[in-house]
Length: 332
Image (tube, rainbow, N blue to C red; front, side):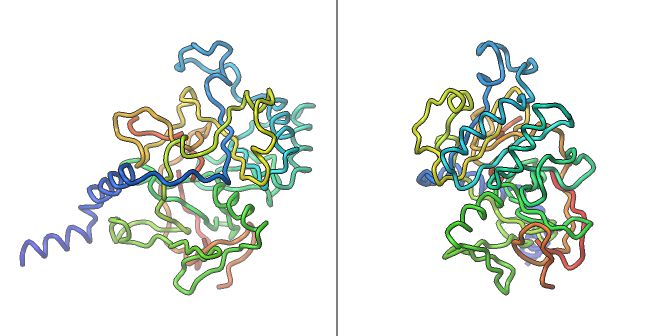
């Protein structure tokens, strides 16, 4: 009886959370690899795109980073002509006002299926975006106590009562909307998309403690695998036209850096602790805050600005709603 009481008490206090999360990690790494999702194409920006000499050490600063606006414009124009459903650009931009920046802004404004990103919460927000509000998604993530990314922050409301979808969720919803598949909130707070149910992560789910901060709409991430689990093409191959013309047609195209030189990797369940392999995720090029979310949220997906009805295991990041009261969670 004493042992039972200690076990129950320990679970309530989250004493076993890390151990249970590590068991989940083991399961994710050893389960059969899902079939590749052919609806997604990743355009990767790696060291060969960033360095003049491919053999330069990755501890040095890349000489092609940030990417010149001209390169971004050229890449997007090349991809857009092959009619993808949606294009996601996983990059931040510094504040500038020159001819190349104006060309980039014009391209963004005339490419309605191009989605950018911004950091929404915390003290280190991204600079004002080049993208209009309806083409913008959040890049924020939440980390577990061991700094691993196991949860996905899908949507939040900020302190100004504005809703924000995550970058990955925005790309997916734009793609599905073209098939007349739209999110439907369920009475229990889950979200239905077509025949699929997206369960909302609750306190105590998946080995997490009852004290887990589940602010916003969070899910338990379902990692598909490393980069081999996706169709990928390098930035240089896109720029040189070295690809099949049907590669991008009717696809979700995600553009972002995977270069270890940028030191924007995260621990994930899918890679063992002694591995340096990159998973299918893009790095962010500025520092982020530690996770800290407030738990006043109630339900599911919303389009932006719509009101609610009431070093170690590492990953560069890509994969990776609705409170009773507006709140300001702080996510990574």
